[in-house]
Length: 222
Image 1 (cartoon, helix red, strand yellow):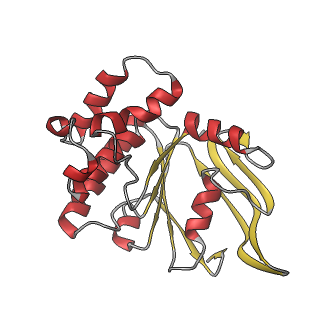
Image 2 (tube, rainbow, N blue to C red):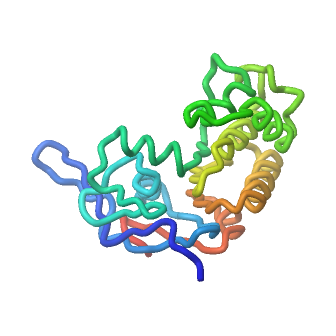
């Protein structure tokens, strides 16, 4: 029987604008099982990026309960949330978010250094090789193309062996052919590692490659 790795119970998110409360998400309920691939889809302004932030412990809900890999996120302070992310979560962002002063190899090693892992350099080189960039290990982000930067970020995302990986519009800044390559690498690395994958995207072709789609519209699950 599959175990639940992410659970939302009656989750809402509001923002305060002066004396006005702006509802962003309303009464969200879902469960994701370990090892599943899931996409969250919806138009701009639908709340899907806010939902991803809640999933990953980057933001706190206004109401309801969020449980990630058995850990209740509600009420944790920022240091505790950072520890949860470091130990359980991987990220791939649309704009890559590589550290510009570090080489590709050093960028991949960052999550491992935060966890105090051993044999970091060997593992980082292996991951760069898996995304076809072992010969670019000493290059800085400014010396890499957008597609190469995203492949480095893929290697970095799997560096700390996350239980769940969140990808926010992972091909949003890439051309069609580069997107196809990055998508194939993302799903292949995910299969090999047995990681749970949650993709936020407006690209229905990408969403169709996941086992399940959660559609968001107007702050609710449509």
